[in-house]
Length: 239
Image 1 (cartoon, rainbow, N blue to C red):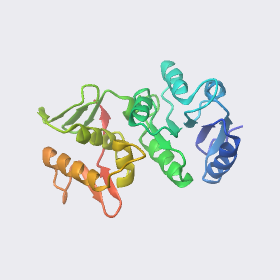
Image 2: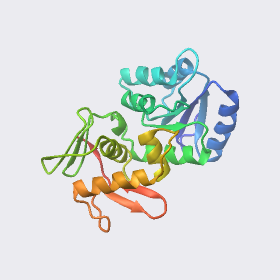
Image 3: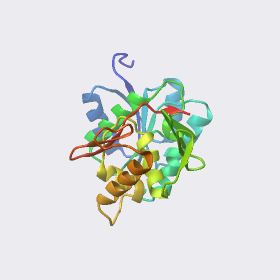
Image 4: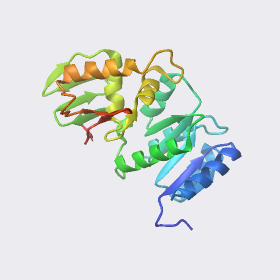
């Protein structure tokens, strides 16, 4: 019987060493954890007792993580899902998000970082609603991002942004009110194995602020978090 006073997590990975250690850590952190060893077991577990959030590896036998996400979403279930991946290509990660995952985290990872992601996803999730990361259109006040067409409008006027700045704005808006370290933003834009510095993120932030007319000392959209990174000042809604 699941403890109703604690958020219920489903942890999906074919590596028992990960599920044993990580499961115990998440239990100690205040969550009621169930474990599935692959996507097929996870589909059954979700159908039997819907969790509050799923943490799922991508590379698994039978049904992998991305196929698990596709099948869950095809059934109309928007339970929050965080994918764990060793895949370094930005396309693989963006494809996973496009298919309906709420967030991803690259292996190896710090369990505390996963805990932070879990809390952030649960905070911004609305039961029964498509996650921001899987939505075609996002809106924050008069700022509108058409994620399918890769077009940005502010006060009804289309803005001209470089592709990297548009990708950065996309990531910020799909993670509203979350402190995002420069290293995490760099990985989201250039991949986990990058040969550039976090200054590249600062340059793209400066571009966004210039085009949005956003004052860094009194921001409407992008706030600097001293010595850490940036935060998008929500709220963001599905447009």
